[in-house]
View 1 (cartoon, rainbow, N blue to C red):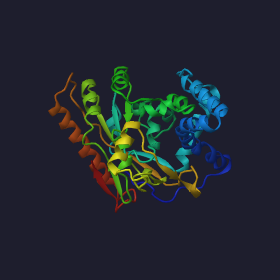
View 2 (view 1 turned 90 degrees about the vertical axis):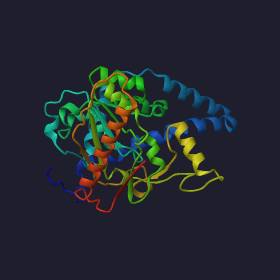
View 3 (view 1 turned 45 degrees about the horizontal axis):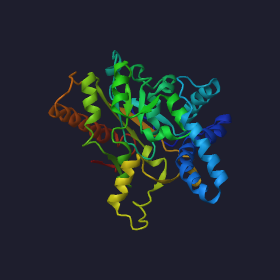
View 4 (view 1 turned 60 degrees about the vertical axis):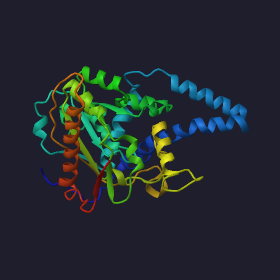
Length: 335
């Protein structure tokens, strides 16, 4: 592997320097607005019935608009451009322990991307719009990104996610995508990792994540360990009920609520307290694929064996590259 530059990100120039301050916060703002829309509408029904009713009706319309395979032309251009300038903004780089291992690969692969952090931004580069980036190995491009189904209840954002190649994370989608011969990319630790995040460490919640390994074995799809350095630092965050005790809600109860709703409520801040993320380089390292046997209904012992191999590979990726990427004192915790 060649050494990468871990210095500060370069200066954006011209139109890009202005456009980035619109394109990047749009994604975060969209998620925040979507999360607040329903509760604000319900509260408004009591204080401002007319406004609340209109707001709920509009929400219902937006979340029932059919999802189409291809976006309108102007949206397609926006997505391509936002991917380009986002890559340059942080910047985002993707390196490989052994890129030749993917040279003749036909797939499908199961890309296990860690950590989740506040938002696993760089995983999107393995989707449809990452095809335009030369740092994506061709056989890993155009993967389907499996994300929390909660996001598909978010008006407008649900369409953007769909056009990016995102699909709800469930067994049916997982099996269907692999059967089509397409890669699956997901963060197996999921939002559960957001409950355990903390300063000076990275977190992977993997020890109970047998499902993705079982489905990979059923399809005979190699597991691809992938780790992103720097991603955890692009946003500061406060988790109500966890970082700040509120209303005497026990910590374990807050954990339970987060698991049930599919996300961890967080107050996040980026540059100058806005939704604009800090310019922290995101360095993604892709490990060598872990071949798995193809077997219907694999026994628990076999699934556990390959889950352990995946965890060991992820830990090795972290430990072998943290100094290289400028994170000498960072530690890893695996749950």
